[in-house]
Image (cartoon, rainbow, N blue to C red; front, side, top):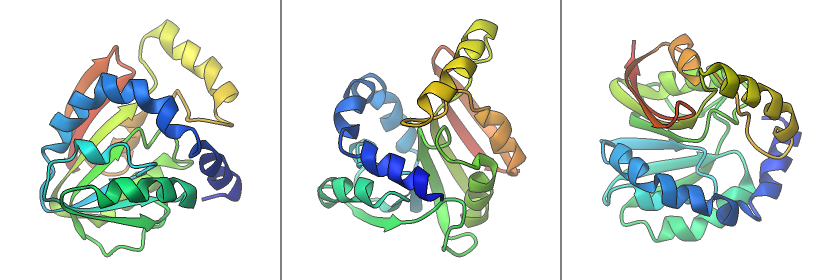
Length: 200
């Protein structure tokens, strides 16, 4: 992960909880329903400040990674309050130091609108996921509607310096990394989606 990318998200950690509060209330029930499908050893990619920890069912064995040490600092107290085993690890999804097939479930939450090389990151998740494992994704994606898609294309260069990319073709990237999407569900228009995927 590039130094500038790390600096951007380290800086964002200071205000991340307050800026994401409305989305957490708006979309929390969808995340809770999705994360309830976690089984076995679970990898959470882009833990951020730990806002998503409360949406996981109790008793899981979760490894939560993020490349931003400042994000993980904020997440530490929330991790300690999780009723299960939740470990925080500083890691770059482009090059994970986990063994092949190490996890039964991989979870992402507004992750692949920010990973610099999304297909490479997804390939790493494909590698560390067991053959019969499942990937659960809550993601902001480029809408297919012509006007909305064009708007996201225009806005992305303006916001990428301090926030995520708004026009990622995440479903295509998931397939390019070797996954088969078994469920795709629109939460808000077709910009905020749930995906479930398995190894193709």
